[in-house]
Length: 571
Ligand SMILES: C[S@@+](CC[C@H](N)C(=O)[O-])C[C@H]1O[C@@H](n2cnc3c(N)ncnc32)[C@H](O)[C@@H]1O
Ligand SMILES: COc1cc(-c2oc3cc(O)cc(O)c3c(=O)c2O)cc(OC)c1O
Image (cartoon, rainbow, N blue to C red; front, side, top):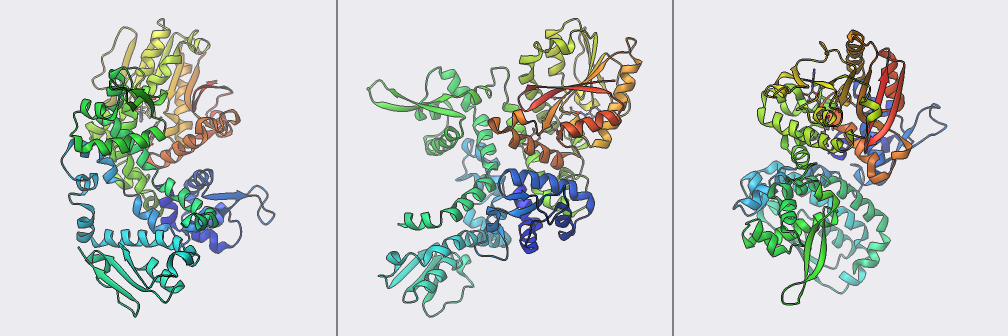
C-alpha cells in the first residue's frame, strides 16, 4: 500500500527528473504538497528506503545535515521508461478477494474473487471497464519487462513461421517479438472484450474467443528488482492468508490432534469438502514457507511415508485455548476497517482530512469505534491479546512497581495489563481510565476500578501513571498536554513522589536493529500511526524532547518487551 501510494504521488518520477539526489524539501515542493505533509512524506520514505525502494546519500551538493533520495530498483516504476511496473503495483493493491479467502473455504462460490465481487474475475472485468483497463495495463506492464530480452531469444523464434500468443492481452509481447523477428505471422488470441478494439496489421492478427535460464541470468538484476517490487506489492496477502488460517481454526485443529497432521486429516477435521483440499494444501504451503507451520515426514499405518503439519513457535501464539493468544490481533489487522485506510494514503496526502482513516471511513478512529460496536470490540480484543504477551514478564518488573501503592493505567482498554500487574503486585490499587464506550460494562473488583473519561481533561491521582501503546497514537503536541496532566496527577498525590511509565517503541536503538526484522516492524508501525491516527513512533531523542517540554527531569529506558521498551520518567 505504501509503495502504491508513492507511485500514485509520482515520487519515483520526480526523483528521476531531478537528475541528482533530492532532499525532502525539494521532493515535497516538486510534488506540490503543502509543507504540513512533509513529516508524513519523510516517514513514508524512511520505510521505503528501509525496504530498498529508494536509497539516501549525503552529498556535498546538499546542506550539511540533509540527505538526498535517489532511485534503486524503483527505476522499474518510472512512468517515462520501459519497462514500467507501476500499473502492476497499482492494480494488485486491491485486497478485497484476499479478505474473503476464509469465507470462500466455508462457502460455495468458485473463487474468493467471486465471494468478494459477486462474479467470476473475467466476467467482472467484462462488466467493469475501469478495472478491465487497470488489469490490462498491469499485465502489459509486466510484459514490458520481458520485451527487453526477447531479441536474445533467437533459438526460440528464428526457425518458426507463425506464432499464436494465447491470452496475449493488448499486444505488447507479440509486437516485441515481431520487432525482433519480422518474418513471423503472429496471432493474439484473447477474450473478445480484451482484443475488441485492437487493429490488425499485416503480420499481426487479433482473435477474440470465449530456455530461457540463460536469458534470465543476463537480466537477473532487472528480474530481481521486479521480484522485489512484486513481493512488496503483494505483501498484504501474507496477512490475509494468516487471518484465513485463524478463521478456519487451523492452528487449534493441529494442536488438538496432538501429533503431526496430514492434509486429509486436516481437511476432514475442518469439515471442509474434499474439493477444497488442494486450496488448503496451497495455503499451508505458503504458511509453511512463512514459518507459521512446519512439515514432518512420518510413516502411516501402511508404512508409507507421509508429510504432516506441526505447529511452530509462531503458530503456538495463535491458539485460542492458550494465553497469550495473538489471533484477535491478526484478525483485527486484516479487518477491512483497518486495511481500507491504507488504500487512502495517497488521497489523504493530496487532500484535507486529518488522517487516511478519516478519508476512508468519514470519521476519526476513536469516534468511529464509538459508533461501531462491532469494530470497537474487534479492536479492544486485539489490544488485549497484545497485552497478554506482556503479562508473562510483569512479575519481573519488581523495581518498577514494588514501591508504589497506586497506579492508573491510562487508555488501559479492558484492563488486561492492569490485571497482570495486580497479579504480580497485589498490594497495589489500580484504576483503568479509558473512553466511556471501552469501559462501559467492565466490572470493578476490590483493587481494580474502571473510570470512563478523557485523559486530556483529567487523570486520577496516583503514584504511577502507566501508558501502554497510547503515546504513539498522539502527536508531539498532544503528548506534551497529556504528560502535563500526569504531572498534576502525580503532584496531587499525597506522597508527592511518583513517575510515569510508558510502554512503547523506541526507534533507532542499535541493539534492536535487524534482530528478527524489528526495524521493519517499527517503521511499519510508524506509518500505521499516520494511517490511523495523528501519532508516530519516536527515537530516544524525540522522546526526551517531549519529557523536557512537559517538565520532567529524568528518564530511564529498559528494552523489555521485544519491539517495545519500558520508559520511566520522573518529575
Ligand atoms: C492503542 S489502544 C491501547 C490499549 C491498551 N493500553 C493496550 O495496550 O492494550 C489506545 C487506547 O486509548 C484509548 N483512548 C483514546 N483516546 C482516549 C482519551 N481521550 N482518554 C482516555 N483514553 C483514550 C482508546 O480507547 C484505547 O483503548
Ligand atoms: C500496538 O499498538 C497499536 C497498534 C496498532 C496497529 O494498527 C494497525 C493498523 C493497520 O491498518 C494495520 C496494522 O498492521 C496495524 C498494526 O499492526 C498495529 O499494531 C494500532 C494502534 O492504535 C490505533 C496501536 O496503539
